Amino acid sequence: MRDNPKDRRKHTRVALELEAELQLDNSITAEGKTKNISFSGIFMYCVNAANIPVGGNGSLKIFLQADPHINIINFRCQVVRTDESGVGIRFINIDVNGYQQFKNLMIYNSSDPDMLLAELEKNPGLDIYKGA
Image (cartoon, rainbow, N blue to C red):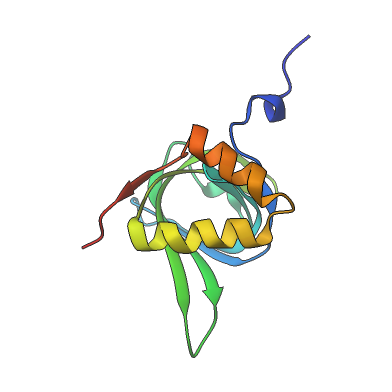
């Protein structure tokens, strides 16, 4: 009997629908909506996911607010899987200011913030760097 991939996850997923944009280093761009987010990655619904190469590196923007007060969280990321509905993306790193916004977003939208914080202490999920 094979292990269920969900049982191996280090971070709880939070169901959250936000606008997002993936920009790969090879100039492929995909826009869509988030399905769920964890401290280590995200699944994003998008059209033509089959055209997105698994293993591709790039940046991911999650839009918290629209015009006129745009608020964006930026991640460095890698595509880890695709299917007919979208892409699975692993976070690589984020700047410290973006991380604080991201952490607050996750805690605010979690059904169990204490469990989420405990998981985060054990395994941060992504590298945090001092912004420019």
